[in-house]
Amino acid sequence: QVTLKESGPVVVKPTETLMLTCTVSGFSLSNFRMGVSWFRQPPGRALEWLAHISSSDEKSYSTSLKSRLTISKDTSKSQVILTMTNMDPVDTATYYCARTVVVLPDRWGQGTLVTVSS
Amino acid sequence: DIVMTQSPDSLAVSLGERATINCKSSQSLLYSSNNKNFLAWYQQKPGQPPKLLIYWASTRESGVPDRFSGSGSATDFTLTISSLQAEDVAVYYCLQYYSSPQTFGQGTKVDI
Image (tube, rainbow over all chains, first blue to last red):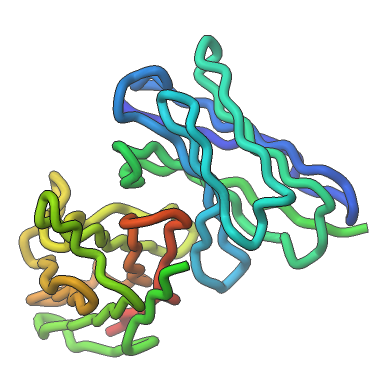
């Protein structure tokens, strides 16, 4: 059974760096064709793709957020980490990770709500 | 970036009636080497993560009821719910995975 679980702070202050962890089970991050993407969804708004990391460690980022994002993985721990620098209240959102088959997201975590507030 | 535009933004359909959602992309999602459209549809219910319904524009994900169908090619796509059930009330999103960055439509809210 494939599962993904996001973890990280519930509240961050403006200008701080957010670090989120996606812990996966039921598949291996080194499995050919398997990757993980991160998404976010501000309250009441649409989904937004943030970043992707492939089984071969290729990384890609949102055009508008590229300068603030870093994605990495620890295959031995079955974890994918996303960091976002210089957080702002407009970054308040539910953050999701999802397994990708090549690049198609097929299984999602439940998401974690991150609020940016002083 | 490829821009995805859904229509309508919301629609109300009677139980048992057909619901149709459109998705238009700013450039073709058809990959000529394999003749596949890199377009997926997701369903999102309140408080839940998105659920994959359709990929390659028309391939139903395992376990998805056959009242859900996808069609279209290149830049114009449609998600059809042939006979709306109460449990289909949700927001539906299209996603292009043809190129990075992946982009979603703005979502279509389906109500009864």
